Picture 1 (tube, rainbow, N blue to C red):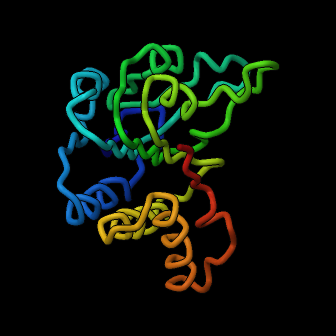
Picture 2: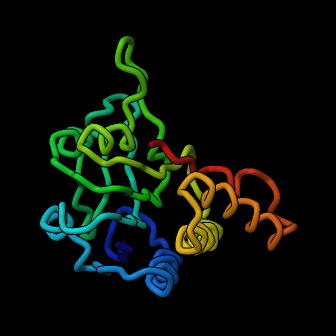
Length: 186
């Protein structure tokens, strides 16, 4: 679900369309691109697919985790609180967006992140980021990840191997900033 953030307070993510197109060449997908990538269209798709790949912006509110959100076209936000209340029976959601696995830590609850909200909503496995991820490198990493899963690797192994493949193909980008930001939960 890549978006075009023209006329937005968010910067465009130029590689998110290429990221999605690469994944579509590997595995059958239903794509919501640019202006069709709305909150309403996303919500209407829940329960229809086994896996979702969301290449988009995420907004982290460090003072109020319930205001953190996934950002769709036209700057529509799907807030933490809304995600928490969804019935989202997907096998896997990849949050190809910045900071989706970080959040406010609450005593007795743990880390209140967008990833956690999806898990609570019923998603079995969430791939999320631990920091502000680089656009171009993420597109390449995700291509390897989905190809590895298509080749029969379990999700956790596929992600680990995608990171190794990225390092081997990009010797000048071995710093963890470029490839280590994504982890899988579940």
